[in-house]
Image 1: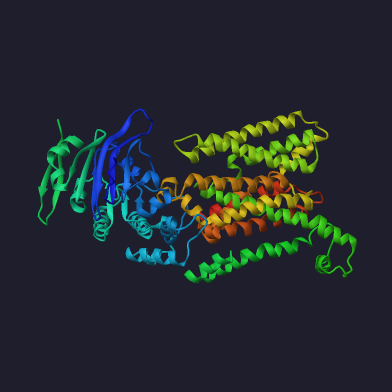
Image 2: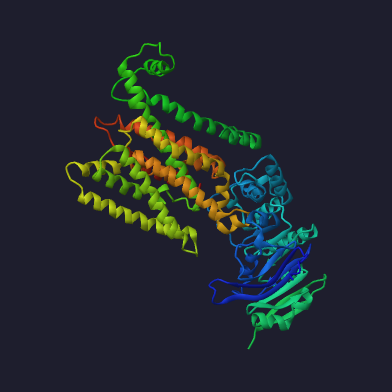
Length: 265
Length: 347
């Protein structure tokens, strides 16, 4: 008999394939609890993004299942999933120059019926989300005119207006400058403290040290290792995953960093 | 419309937007009344008003000529211009949002080419205006259905798949139109086909306009209700899905509405280009890209524009100039002017 999982989010024996011939990943298991920040590391093309897109049914698993609060997402429609899971994609390409407020209002969509449109309450929630990220003054500006860091904040505000309890972030720091990277990681940490569960992909092991309490390394169609950042991000694992020699250094401030030394022979 | 204006006022109270909205509403109404005065037979404003009032108060004495001109000649034409202008513009705006591309026009999925073929074949085989209208409407739907079925089967990108198959279906029906022209009787049928394809609303009657108005009003109403969701669809499928939208379903409904609207419009007017591309752009300059305001704006502006162009088409020369030629002659340079002036910023 199937045992119903009670975690906020659980992936069980997940298998995915684009063409039904070759599996992108298989046998993936992961549990996420309230307040967790899970960081998925791994080389380019290992399937990190594909995996997280299975969490909110942007892709459908070939085998296995994803559960949110114990319910299989197969049995939940897209709108209800969106009330539970917020998603910030990587590399958004704008088409129309919507105002910042209009973009954030879109986050209210899963709370509205098909023929309904945004009302006063939705404006209030969206404006509060903007205030939370210091964007309220810019609400009438076209979001396309903002800097990359500000645009990222707009998407965070939208996801907050969406009021989910799980957040999926696809490389949230990839297009940002040095300062904005750290600010984004701080935001992620704070949102987790507020009770959100976060699953993110990253190219930076350092970022896992800063913001995560759980790390999974994806390689060769599965999770190579999973656990606390200090236990998983090791010289040996990094060499296996990325094929380079790495030094893990404790720099004080309660922080470790991961420094690439040279490519492995 | 009123609700969106109220929303605007309560949110930022901007007087500029208020005045833009007022002009957008008053413009088509003003041109509507003006249009009754324009034409070869001179009518004074008083005569027009009296003739209209006479329908309600039969005791008023008006001339039979004035009644015929106002009710049977000018009214169907004016209403046709309003319907076709609003229809093409709103379908253009909705398609631009749905396919997240500001260069898309209502005939992107082949509806005009299909309707053109339907009209040509009906002119050759039967030659009754109402049959031509019906055939144009049905073949417009057939063309888009083919595009939709083929386009949807391309899994990697539904949007790209549909746009590409729309192009192919469009040129397929374009070739069939050419074939019809080639085989048509060059003295009687060919000129009719050519004239139909140029686009004109000079020969419409009240009956034709009434029939076409049903799908147009139905389609516009549904688009109007769903218009806010176009914003989300314009952000791309994955993002829209992550916001809880069933993109396939929504896109299907929007394509159905736009196709009904466009096919019905083309079935009474023939092929009128540029309106569906230019009006959404001008509207975006005036009210911004938010579809909540954009769709009402395109309806007003599209209706006003085509009505104005039709007035020009029946006064500029002694013989009437087909409206499809004039929309391009006026629309294209105006669009280029805006492009230069605005550096394409609004897209």
